[in-house]
Length: 87
Image (cartoon, rainbow, N blue to C red; front, side, top):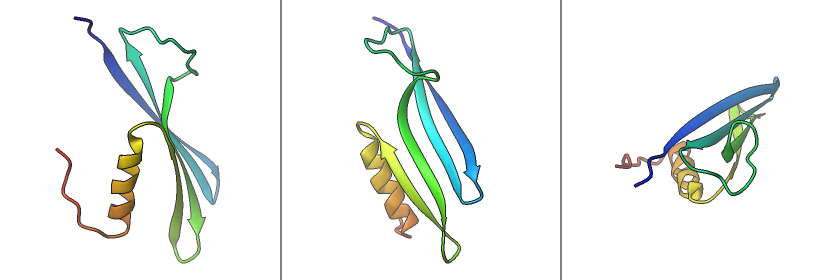
């Protein structure tokens, strides 16, 4: 049985007074990737956070694979819905 470990690398960068970029990358130790990965690992999620009128924030979410479900839960939470924690 092969052993491997995923490590997550969150980053944020202030682009301007009205824009912050956030990314989540992942590296896997103990496995060989069949594709060339960028420095920091595979991108899982990227977010643009932009200042919006009315003291609000516009969020643009870019993701891969199964992270779409996470976006839907976060969107519902941000809209004020009471959601149970995932187990």
